[in-house]
Image (tube, rainbow, N blue to C red; front, side):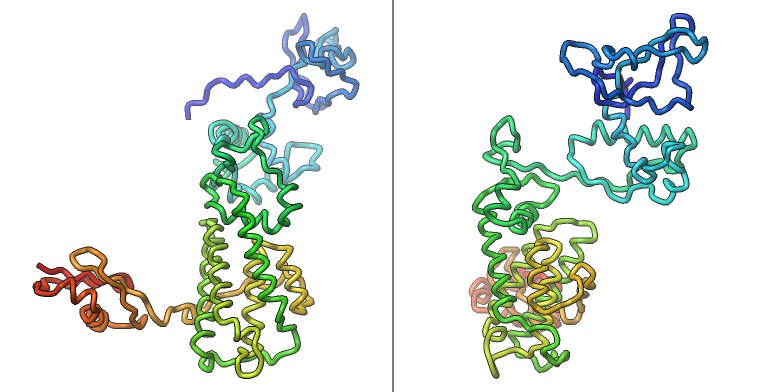
Length: 413
């Protein structure tokens, strides 16, 4: 990058003092290291009359020249705050060090930073300055790393009424207001669900209301018929489950897989929330199995597993509700220390697939086949479909294109 000269001085009180002294005899003299850091005075008046307020504090301004011992004056400009933000994260790792900016051994342990999340407006100032500062400290021997950060993720803006949220535009939706009306979990969940994190979020009040209704459904699903810890036998046989409950179990493991993968780096938490909503719909489709008695009820161990793993999956997105439901389920241990659920690839596998059928590249029908169906069976089912038969009537089949698990394309002329 073609960095240009950077004027770092500011005529402000609040900033890091520039440690230089002006002497009529010796010129510009650095403050001796044993006198660092230069500390801002407390007795300063902010008058807004021009120039640095520090220039009107005689006990700060007037000093002795370190070289000749004569009268001198201190630099009253302070550094631009971008100077501090270019390296403050290094200082965080060794904040109580009074002998040096930081211990290089501590820096070697913590750096480079694994992940930086910030606004795109930082990319051309703060982040470039941070990289420059790191390379400068590397050349000085203070750090060994070449770059401060390994990965960068820039999140989108929040848009309201067609414009970026701004106090000056008067279109700001305050978190306090949303929390008071809808609860903290609904506000958080809507922010995650409304858009991928790298895209702008178009804030809609009706959207957060929909999320609030979803959370109410979650509460009812668990709290109305909780399977309390210690009240059930721990095992059940998957093979004995009816088809509807096998679908619920399959959706559970698909949801665990989906959210776990989203956490590994995609960070598209909107799809994670959508997966939770789909999972709840699948559970509600088998509602009698969760709320019924006798033969209609699913095994208690099955219901307990579904409820607990649902709460664990919900916890990163709606922690307050998740903690409450965890207690309702009679769990004594901390939800924060409960292990993250793991998915079983076999249980997540679909038993049946819906395959689109095309004729000369145009969609004509869809067929349902076993997930492990052979090419011969899929093509046979496709050719037997009434809509496909009508589309290829009186035509010659010249090719049959089969993409496993994806589609069948019948080429005719």
